[in-house]
Amino acid sequence: MSGLLLRGLIVVAVILACVIGLLAMLGLLVAADYFAFATILAPPLAALAAAGTALLFCLVAILFGKLALGAVRRRSRKDAHRRIAAMLGEVFGKEIVDFADKRPTSAIAAALFAGFALGFSPKLRSALRGFLRR
Image (cartoon, rainbow, N blue to C red; front, side, top):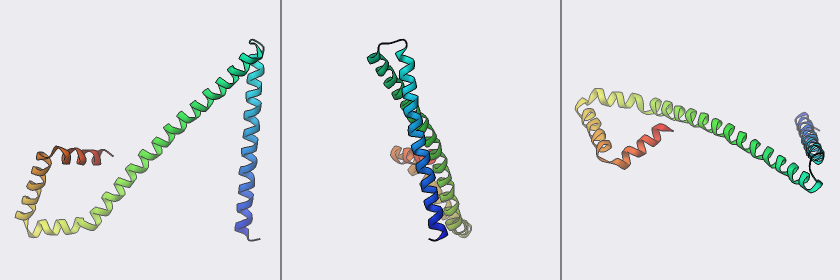
């Protein structure tokens, strides 16, 4: 067996062992929760209370997951916009500066037209605002 395949199998085995251990831990935690509730409630109510506690735990885990995922998405979206802006600046920046240096009247006219278009069209303005806020 190659070294890479062997390392991959070891990683999969370790992950599988961790998942099995976590499932056993959660099962024992629910059982302990049931027995704790059984001391103060009737058995059917203790089972419902243990199920409610497990459901609450799942909801809290989902909430933390969504918060963490949202932070990662925002961060990656900002990085993507920076990369796009840098790439556009590298590709078109020199050409636009050369164009503005060679034809200052046309550059001013293009800037005025763009300003007029943004000022006149609410849809274009909101689309640009939405793009810049991402």
